[in-house]
Image 1 (cartoon, rainbow, N blue to C red):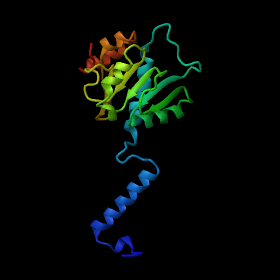
Image 2 (cartoon, rainbow, N blue to C red):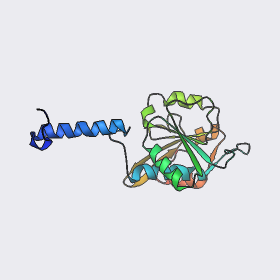
Image 3 (tube, rainbow, N blue to C red):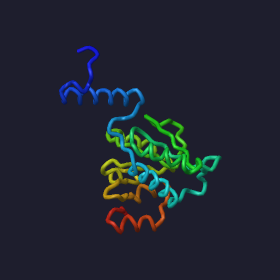
Image 4 (cartoon, rainbow, N blue to C red):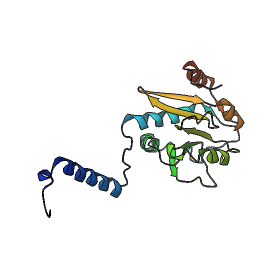
Length: 190
C-alpha cells in the first residue's frame, strides 16, 4: 500500500504502525521506552538529597569549592532525571553528573548506582572501597551485598535499608534519627 491512511488499515496493523512511530520518536529524542516519569523518580531524588542532610563526613572532607553537594549517577536509572529536576529547583545547590563508567578521579559525596548495573555493582563498590563516598541503589540486596543505602518506592513512600557497618568502614556516619526511622520499619540494618 502506497500513501495509505493508517485509519483504513486493520486495527492490529494500525497499532503496530503507531508503536513503530512511537519507538522511532523515542530513538530520535533518546527517550527510553518505559522510562519512569511522574512523582516516583522525584520522590526518590528528594529522599537521596535529604539523606545527605543526615550524613556526617570526616572533618577533613571538603565539599566542592562552590559549596555544592555532588551526586554521581552510574548507569541507567530514572532517579537521574529526578535529581536533574531537583537540581534546577534548588538553585544549583546540588551538582548531578551521569556516567556509564566511573571516572578514576571521581569527586562526589554520593554515588547512585543505577539498576542497569546489577551485574557490575560489586566491582564498582570495590573501586570505591577507600573513598569517603556514600553509595546508594535500588538494586535488590544492595545493602546486604556491600552497598550503604538500598532504597525503593512502594505504596507512595520510600523504603530503605542502611548497612551501618559499610558506612562506618568508609569513615562516614548517619544520624541516629535516620537509623531509627529505618529500623522502626524493620528496614534499617544495624
